[in-house]
Image (cartoon, rainbow, N blue to C red; front, side, top):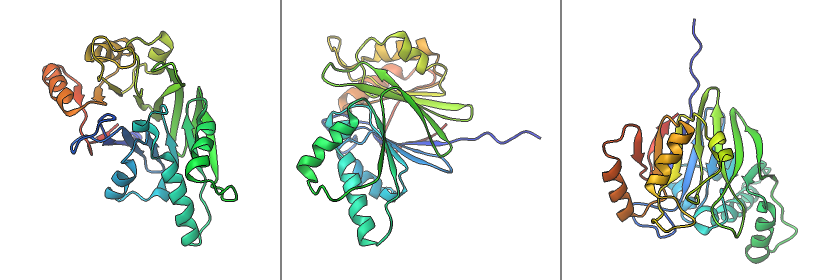
Length: 256
């Protein structure tokens, strides 16, 4: 008797850029298994998209952020602060939450608190996981690996595994990545990355860069996001004849 293959879902809450549209909101993915819910990237408007999909903030076990631009990071503190206040109103204890991301994450949250939540006597139980690391969130294993995006702060990508099934999300990437990134992405069932860059971009990949990265790491499927509406149309035309390559759309749910 063969054992059942364990699977999980990736819900694309946002497939767009820092200039959102009605069709494409800033970057955010919700990863769900039978035991866990992990939010990966948390750009502005993520909060409302969680609520629109019936996802209670208290049900999130972890929030992972790839870097500190607002289209990936802006809604992290609102989620934490809202959970704190909601727990107090409902007279329930605060369930701890992991915050996973690049080096400097805890400092960044502290700096945001100075402006938006200065009540120092109010604390929410957070566990920080920073930089290259691996952690368990229920049944999910999350590997965090450094990537190159911009020189102003650290950036990371994530490999999420359940049993033998895995997907990886890179966040935003400079056109060329070294072999350590390729190793972290090796043979994933799904690679989610961006293709927003122009030919002269130093901080974002072009479609050709993304296709090359997928080939280098032997990804079984490639999903492209972080695109404006006009970019998405052009990229969709270019990949229409390619097997296992597609353009993400908001509210798409993918089983891994």
